[in-house]
Image (cartoon, rainbow, N blue to C red; front, side, top):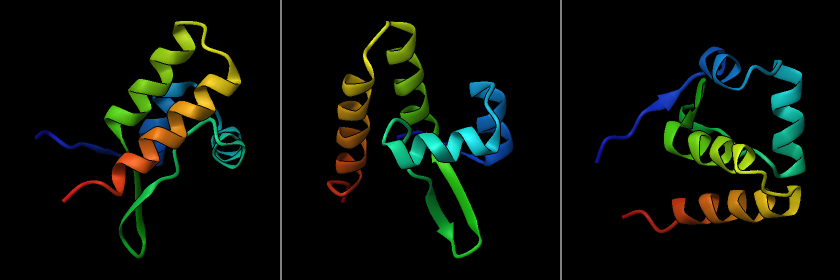
Length: 80
């Protein structure tokens, strides 16, 4: 399993969005919350970010993207 964590500058680059917009989307439930690798190190799973971007490219509605984000975050809890 290839897990890659993207830090905020890379997420900004990948999405083309500002830090404020990224955190607004997290609050709205349309972007997954970051994962904390340590108390001071946060990042986003590359696979989750790509899934959301592909959903946007496919023209999914905001409610569909919220469902996708909820599913992605729920799947994190199933990892053993």
